[in-house]
Amino acid sequence: LTISAVKDTEGIVTNYVATYADFTMDGAAGEQIKNLAFYDPLTQLPNRRLFLDRFSAALTASGRHRDFGATLLIDLDRFKLVNDTLGHEAGDLLLAEAARRMTSCTRRADTVARMGGDEFIGICGKIAAPADAGVVAQKIINALAEPFHIKESECAIGASIGISLYPH
Image (tube, rainbow, N blue to C red; front, side):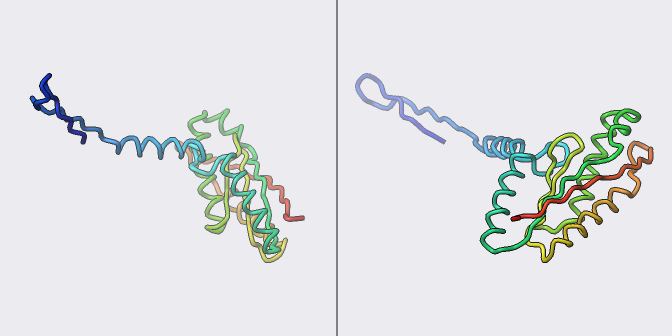
């Protein structure tokens, strides 16, 4: 709230003008802009930009602490068939559910990001042994092999996962 005095030519206050500005919407808009800049709007997973930031931090931490880490490139199998037969709305619902399932297979400190389309990428930092990345990949494969119930239809997809270890 800003209040200003209005004076006449002799400098005597004749009235006051009050201006009120509500900035709560600006904060909400700023939060929405930040969300759109760093998160995929469909799945609410980190997007490519946030993934790159987190991956850079994971590489730095891995080198500093001499830990193993892994990235998992996840491509959904038969996703195009769902889009072609049930429509893009069904495909969007499937992607959102697939994202939830993949996230449930990882630790809270790990990252699952949507790169675009039906491609996702995961960061598993601080793994005890390289084989641990395979365990996470198998959990994701098993979770995505379960039927999806989308728009009164049962959909079956799968996943192909590539694993890369770091820092090597």
